[in-house]
Length: 226
Length: 126
Image 1 (cartoon, chains in turn green, cyan):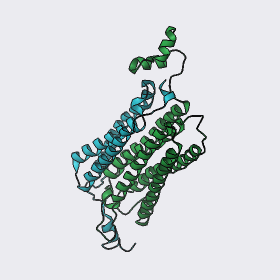
Image 2 (cartoon, helix red, strand yellow):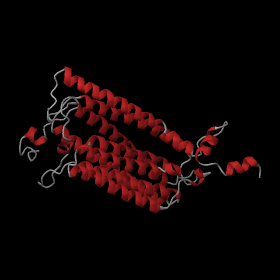
Image 3 (cartoon, helix red, strand yellow):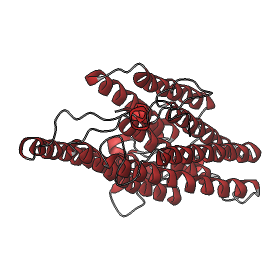
Image 4 (cartoon, chains in turn green, purple):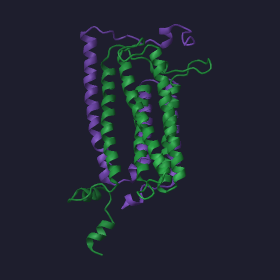
């Protein structure tokens, strides 16, 4: 075997691998192109969400009106109990984490070419995503009923409403698009569209879905808890 | 080449990370439930947030198993955002102080709760 062939079969790892991958005119990313493009899209999406969250940081720091108390506003009572602070948001968080788990399993069974399990796990993921959007719609209507608007609210700083609707709205849009995307992938898996092409598409869809969960981790911390 | 085999790993690690994410989320909810305040609240919430984010990217999104060229493409550019966050925090602090000191805004204003706004028993009326 020639030297080049040996090198191609045993690519260097770590920093040496980084130099090898970027040097000379050759392919830098040794992944399917769809996956590399999805990652680059997600990096750009990271910038969009960070700009929203930095805008929120700045507006919250500069406003001299008191910030509404999230714990009180997002409290919910069940069957006439005392309101439990932030309980709906906690349930939404658990639903989204559950969906991330089922998606990770779907990716795994996809690579095992177990189409039935992959199909049902993606459908379960989409179902949890739809549940999340439903709860978000409930939360929005509750806040709107209490008088929260993008330009003001009865509790404190008017910027609370604009940040709330913009950030959760944009995240909810991502979840909704994700549900449609997942169902589309699920039915193609079921119909055997990927039998010859390979099941990388499930991992690519999974990357998008985990990213949506990842963004929620930051929204949950910065918008609801702090 | 790793890509031809795909990212295939034992199921056990997914179950473990899944359970971990549940527990850490529960912890961050409990921070709010027990009304931990001040520096402790920030420390706990941000720590739990970073643990969750790290495990999602590393295990669920398979970043630990990717090659360095891809990992740095993903994680490198967002690092500049830390600079943006730092600058905007400094600037925001300055603006707020200016509004308190020179524009007569009230330093001690307090937010209203829903029950104060709608009156006692207004929740049941919905």
